[in-house]
Image 1: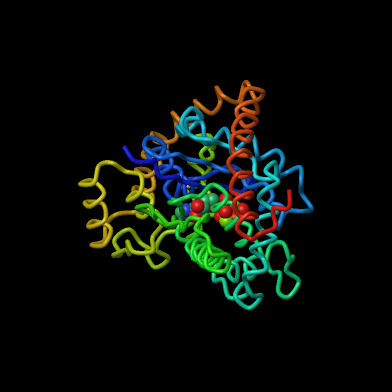
Image 2 (image 1 turned 120 degrees about the horizontal axis):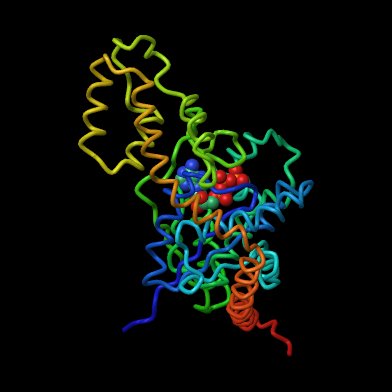
Length: 334
Ligand code: ATP
Ligand code: MG
């Protein structure tokens, strides 16, 4: 049997995880851990690139994100879960990578550009935020990840990482760094409840894995649909209608979903009926996750212990890679 492929992914502890995370990344992580060497990182240092003023928010959400992981079935016996800022090799690797990328290249990263606009930074963007794709390149390469299962917004980050790996290996005549590949999930970008193209934890348009049935009901009721579907008898649009996108992602009864779509497009099917069905589907999906999460939340000490153990393992791996890099660069002095 050959060596297991390595997978690395992460989440910023800026809030609890939501349905977008589930379909975009968590679901594949649960699969991948069965036959990969998987690392999952809680990216607190990256969260501080735009939440430096709210360190307590970042700190508190480390536990929340870890609870979400465990509740969806990421198994710490199969997956190494760790905290980014406790791995000192990562910022050191980033320093060496920063010399291999131009400022101009960083300015043209489409995801970063969109986020700068969304956060209203203009020219006053924190330098740490501007260079977070390089920090991500360090995260991915430190663990020699072969695959990175992520949502669509992360494609430019992986492209940046591949460029850095190639440049590093070529410049220092080595093969220590591994080129990662993106693995996109079935739903690479789940829209928000407000119809915006991405559900985001900082965007106020998310249904969280930890939401109570009442919260989910309120959010589904208030969901954006087809704005031109004014009367029940009017024909409605299914494309770009997040209610149907969510049904596609979470309903197992495909026939029923196709029937609803056809009926909606013909006219005569009210938004409230489709939303009621979506609510049933989401409650059935979220119920076991929320219950498991509540159980685990009773013992936060054990969850932190798991993170400490994972971080210890991750540190050894990252230190080894850093040493190999320094050796390749000829700067491992003693
Ligand atoms: P923030 O607004 O703080 O950036 P976020 O909701 O974008 O939060 P991240 O922690 O940045 O979440 O992303 C973690 C992972 O989840 C990434 O792989 C990302 O592609 C994926 N992801 C996040 N939102 C979605 C979504 N709406 N659809 C699909 N994948 C998503
Ligand atoms: Mg994000």
